[in-house]
Amino acid sequence: MASTPSNVNLISDTQTRPTAAMRRAIAEAEVGDEQKLADPTTLRLQERVADLLGHEAALFLPSGTMCNLIAFRLHLRPGGDEVILAANSHPVGFEAGSPAAVNGAMTRQLDAPDGIFSGAEVEAAVRAPGDRYAPRSRLVSVEQTTNLGGGRVWPLAAVREVLETARGHGLRTHLDGARLMNAVVASGDEAAAWAAGFDTAWLDFSKGLGAPAGAVLAGSAALIEEAWRYKQMLGGALRQSGILAAAALHALDHHVERLAEDHSHARILADGLAELGGVSIDPGAVETNIVLFEVADAPALAALVAEHGIEVGALGPHRMRAVTHLDVSRRDIDTALEAFHAAVPC
Ligand SMILES: *Cc1c(COP(=O)(O)O)cnc(C)c1O
Image 1 (tube, rainbow, N blue to C red):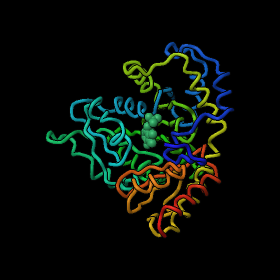
Image 2: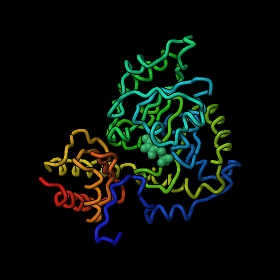
Image 3: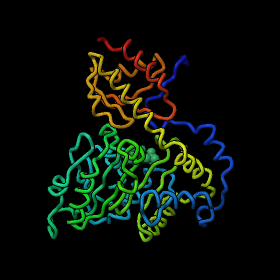
Image 4: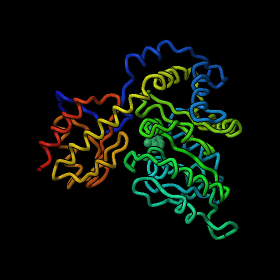
């Protein structure tokens, strides 16, 4: 495509590029052999995230997808185990079938359009113990914030209710915190409050936090020791990973509070879109940096605004998703809204 004067990338918060300051932190990183536990920067990041999430230990991994895969491997055994999670959650739709392929597990998918489910829904989904006909309920997985649910923030009380129900049935629990820091900033509740009570929890550095790659999985010392085994098995053990860990540490120091800007930009975008007759949107549902809306023809509208340099995702025939992040300014939001105004008949 011909280059356009404006380029506003609202496809995903994975699209962030390392800032100049982050690149300096990367350049200055002290490094060693990560597999030998000799990369000081990676060790520092792991300790920092374990503290942040209030868990005993943590493990640096190349991606959030690998955090989910390994955590599920820790909790599920081939032989009919089942994980309870939202139907629109990341492991169901975007991890190449790994719950089945790697863990031999069934997924019990809860219909939760905003990605949030209740203790009662978990209760109803749990299989009767000792039922030899049914899969064996083993794990509950919660996504915070909810990606395809529209960046919604689980209320803390809802998380606790689900944890309590899971515990009552002896189930393991996992927190997919790809955008946990967005929830922290939006709610004012600390990361450790959100991660408390989960057997495993992780956060991603390559989303709104703006690092090039990397995620950290936290849990008990015993679970993280076992996680190392799978990290090695999958080829996820690294060498001078301090290069990446330095970017993540820089992000924790400099890119957390600023997520509030992304949230405010998303809200402004949502309010502007709501003024268009051809757009169906509930701006009140925009709590963080993800804006979901419906139009008559999503692929056609995405193509139209792309002519104005606005990149936005068509998730289906009607549904569109715009995500704000580090590389989207207040001015970019106005530019995007102008393009939508031009493209959508009022
Ligand atoms: C992006 C994402 C992941 C996967 O993280 P990657 O670092 O891209 O592998 C997992 N869960 C959710 C909710 C996500 O949004």
